[in-house]
Image (cartoon, rainbow, N blue to C red):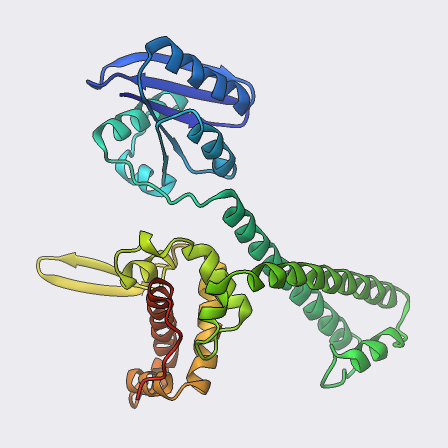
Length: 338
């Protein structure tokens, strides 16, 4: 078994090959696109006539490279870049050394891996993140419009973003520059709203074909956006041995500093997909309102201290993740606890 470590860049890639005893067989630098990297790996396989394990760090195009390497290699491992830096913190760093370290890591079986979903799931996740960015852009434009009206001393109606409010905005007459800015912002708002409708229609069509999304929507407070995001990021429920591992994946567990028998808990880690974490917190507020059992859990966590409401709602989001994972594994719908 040959172990190959690669420090991958868009136009230049360093490659280190170790034999089954951990001895360096060759080091190469490939200049060009990733197609040339694939060709070089094929040459290594043909040259040594051995099974191949390839390791490289996750990056923006890691999914595409993983799909191509998976067709020709016996095993492909994608390393977590943050955790890899924690293991190898060195002041002497370049592409060749990084490739050597990745090759040694995969030889020792100490690679901190990341989960690589299939191409369709990756595309689904990208569309979910794109929708989230569109919502943020729309919110920014709305805030700019309100700020503009405030600067001009114009009192806006309470419901500014419904049909009547938009008609009122369109008919508003301001001075030359403020009027020009308002017109441009209204055009931008219309564009984002149209884009959102297209994206959400496609997401709804895809979610309608997935029974796991419908299953999670039986949880009080969990709508289609939260359900599809959870299903897309969990993907295979079997990769989480315990429900707490899923909560850790979504960054909803407290940071821990343990030493000399003393445990110090801090803020949540906020690792993993931020979009899913935000949607989970929003769903937690709705679940508190709609589910008696969740409301009872929330009240118990808050106790007599109103300042613990935010802590309690994060704990409810943690609870929703654990419940969602259990439901996806068992296939059972939500059952309201007594």
